[in-house]
Amino acid sequence: MLLDGGMPTDVRIALVGDHQPAVIAHRAIPRAIELAARDLAVPLSCQWFNTAQLASGAHDELHASHGVWCVPASPYANMQAALDAIRWARESGTPFLGTCGGFQHALLEFAHHELKLPHLVHAEVDPESHHHLIAPLSCSLVEKSGTIRLAPGSRMATIYGSFEIEEEYHCSFGLANEQERLFDGSPMKVTGRDRAGEVRAFELSGHPFFMATLFQPERAALRGVTPPLARAFAEACLARAAQHSPI
Image (cartoon, rainbow, N blue to C red; front, side, top):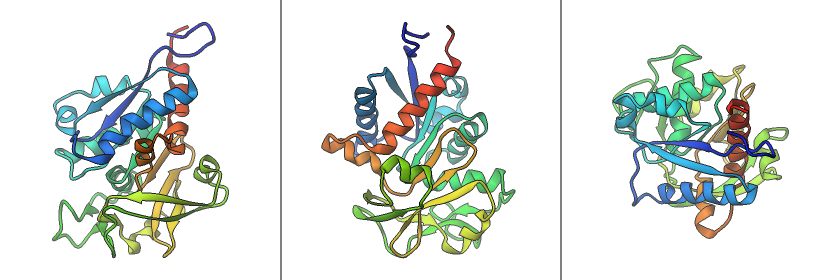
């Protein structure tokens, strides 16, 4: 439904991952959505979809959402369910944001279904494989922060209003450096790198909103600051809801 001014009355965001109250990002993400809703003066609600729940057939509920945020704290209880949710968002044009584990699995999903490389795996799940797309970082980024350089002309740089940002991490895995070449010429564009040149963010060209970061921008919400990416994601979800709301 739409309000008199054309504003949707219900904008639903699916949080895909296995909710754990002790995980900092899991406390921060709902707060980030609350702050974005306040700033935009729009009604936003979020619903957790644990991967085991999705594997048991919650897809109809997921598909009623106007945006998907694939959250940190992997390995997921059911990795395939997370990949299926990401694929649905990508193929349906539903706004998508992935942070930390969401970044890693969005790359896996794209490699499996668009690059036709289903043998590529996540080292956290299959450490003995010789085909890691997602591999241990050269230096752990658990509870670390660092500088990310954003690509000029990228949507992410526009969202942040800067070509250089400082963000926080809690991760030990990322895109294997030798595998970055697989994405050359594809719509999956690297938009953020650390000072050493390693991939820290990407966006999917041709999609209304499909972005992912190895860092956790949501953590700013715990300091009362609206994360720029959360606000931009919320705006994209609002646009999606307006397109699909009955008049």
